[in-house]
View 1 (cartoon, rainbow, N blue to C red):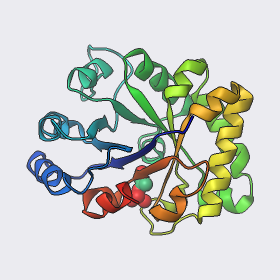
View 2: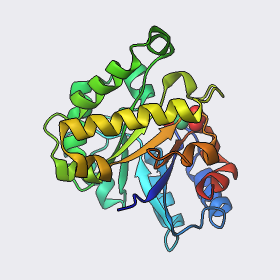
View 3: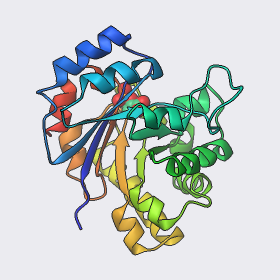
Length: 245
Ligand code: PEP
């Protein structure tokens, strides 16, 4: 069965609520494509206005972060039931900025993946290596280890619904892109690893995105790349070109 392409924008800490609504209006016609799952992953404060702004369009709503408890004394946090109730479908987990700047480790990331599934949200689970690991040649072991840790206790049926984003850290926001062959190599490695951890049907179903200064058309032509997680370019009309690449 062919996997459905998924192009997700990661807005990061950009767009005030009014700018967010304006961006939705700018992109509305540019991202029309019923053959692709289009997702805007937006800052928490933009979730409610963006949910309203994308009503009746083909765009799905995503979030960038949440905490693993349902409610309570966790000042500053937002829960999975809150996201779900606001219309969120996808949630980015394990982005390198959350790992590196906010100290999220694989134990917490694994808890988040399980909590997201339990709450009816679809994780976009990010993995990827630093430049040092790439140059040392140990990046394949590193990525397999991240995937094993982050999916500990996650069922095959859940993994069939999962989205994995391969984002080499050295290509995020740097303008440096992995070549299509480099990206394909790792996306295939991830799929093969899922086959080893689960089975061939699960590996065939899981969707794997590439992310990092994305050069869409060439990357998306590769057999194991099912879409993109897009940072900077998701805030501009360029996002429409990626959706329709
Ligand atoms: C990202 O951080 O998810 C990303 C892919 O960023 P950029 O496209 O800006 O490199």
